Length: 101
Image 1 (cartoon, rainbow, N blue to C red):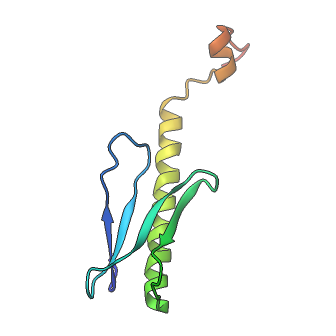
Image 2 (cartoon, helix red, strand yellow):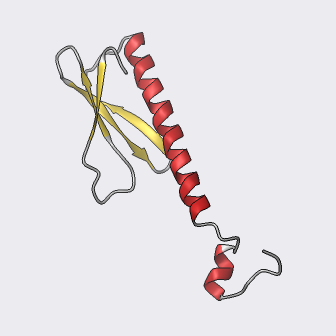
């Protein structure tokens, strides 16, 4: 996938979202972490201190983030559609059915 970077998925047991360690293919040093940022509603990259980035590495990272965020949106949409029975959530709590389904 990437010429210069490893994206290593971490153990996310017990969590709703994934995280990844980013390492250099050249020397396997840690470059940072990709994780879910709830306020921005997307995956973000947190670089390690004193890392330097070439255009190619940033492009690989950007493409990985773009695909990861797209995958997440599709998963959320699929879960929402699987749970959609046509009854608005507030009406379920009150036990009230809408006039039309």
